[in-house]
Image (cartoon, rainbow over the protein chains, first blue to last red):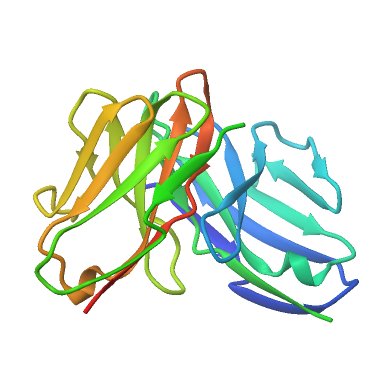
Length: 113
Length: 115
């Protein structure tokens, strides 16, 4: 059974801090790993990672995948209150041609002014 | 691009009634749509996958007679919660995958409260 585990489950930081969120996974047939940000409504897409060691970057957010150790990290530098959200990590189901996603429980990030 | 809408955004109903939630892909054709449920402080749980023109595939433990899914066109899927009960109260989110490929784009979600 595919499994996605995120840590920590929650995190409280001050504005300006840098945070690292973790996601480890166990899948039979790995294809990619996705990060989403969920505020009050549905998740919004952040990154899709398929290759090990290649950092994806978008503004203050960056993410990298380690396929050997089966984990990914999401970094947020110079955090702002608007970064407060639940960050979800997901991997596609192992079945060929399947685009269903298995989600982790998420990391709830709270950024205090 | 890649906008998915849901309607209604919030619904309150009495126990025993049926509720229909619509999911539309506004600017692309979605061959596959997914329906998720999210209880408070929990992650998204996939309920079913629907492909346009065919029957939905339900996840284990999801009653297909209770959660009716129709994906009649490439831009619309509906989820009907039949004979809703208070334990069905949840946040229901749909997502859509474009015919051209790529991953899932999520709708804004529908908050269902059953009294």
